[in-house]
Length: 535
Ligand code: CA
Image 1 (cartoon, rainbow, N blue to C red):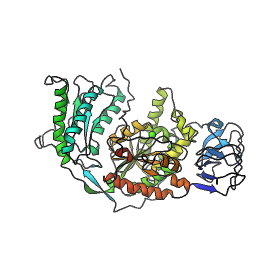
Image 2 (cartoon, rainbow, N blue to C red):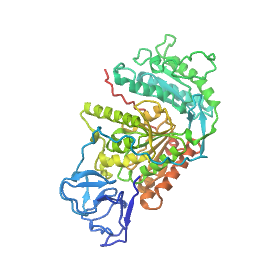
Image 3 (cartoon, rainbow, N blue to C red):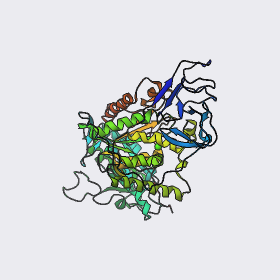
Image 4 (spheres, protein in one colour):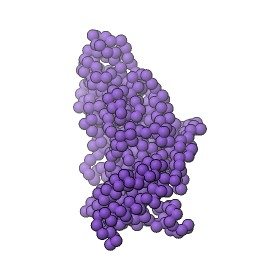
């Protein structure tokens, strides 16, 4: 993990503030301005140039003269080449940079870095809900699976009734969640890539926070039939209604069944079925489990130049703590790690793991290519206003969330986690799609860093949001759970914030603390990744 090198000094040249610059590596020829509100022209940087331009907060300044065609170095790597001569003290923004081409996928180093094993971290526990399949939930939620969007309105109506009439009688159940989505019909269900949305929905139904209580609402005529979504054997139902040893019968309410006469009969049927599940969920109690039962998905969204300096390195430090504690951590967001592929393949535990990573990246390159796009489509106007010039710079700041542990497992989109340790779960970088796919993988806790600010949340798992800047943490004081801006302010270290996050995770996982998104009941829609055609 890069060690930020900060430079600050007394005000000079008539400026009112002490300039605070952050350079990630000694070889970098740019640094970012950390001061709230940026720095005016004429500011003298101690040991550096006098600023020629006003430099906004989070944006880069040339520390030395950079000749046309020379690399602009941040994180010790070229994030671009100068399109013209850049004098020292200039604001280095995207219009001055030519983005480097993506590295090819041939000849990558595979499992070449074999770091000394991280010392185990023992004795940390949380209070979780142990499931029959061995997984552990951090919340106790009844989820209602849907085969198709057509049933969303009626399911939502029924869920409102369940919450109003039944939930108060089952105080050990945290929530009732309708797994609404846009898939199920009007899609090329037999196209090879349809496996992605189908397995995603299947695996979300089996998320540890749902306690194995699977119930399905189906329309009847849809392409994604319940038996195709959850084939026999995919659901291990511990249900007193079914004889021991018998094949579990999926609990399905089918709206087109002849038995339903009128809307309220359908609603009644969903409410009645839900009650059995609520009763069993309500009988569950939290028990002390080792921290190794955490399954954490890390993600960023609304990134700025501080993401890769404060919040993401703190998350990376915490990732290492989790791996040392034997937990599972997933990092994702393919277009944001594509430019660091060589770092990642070299950190793979075996050449096979590296090959799996390359296979996922190649698949994604081809997917983007079919749509006439490439990885450069990732950066947003907000990223650029926040000081990120291009995807290379964004990627270097994003990858640090993965910490330093060896990468031991790779998941294709929608697959379920197979092993503990650090996993690269290939997903798009889209916040909603990444979160949805990490849910399918079995995530029971989500960590989300943001610099520009987003109120992102999920109904199924707690989302801990980490602000990259103190100014954002102050302004969004009742939306952000952790302020990593203290690292740029110089009042905390990466390690301090990493430990704070680790302890907060154990509290949130145990239900002792709620995240702000939970407090306000903010959650985004599930958004399936469907690379297959629609009809
Ligand atoms: Ca994202």
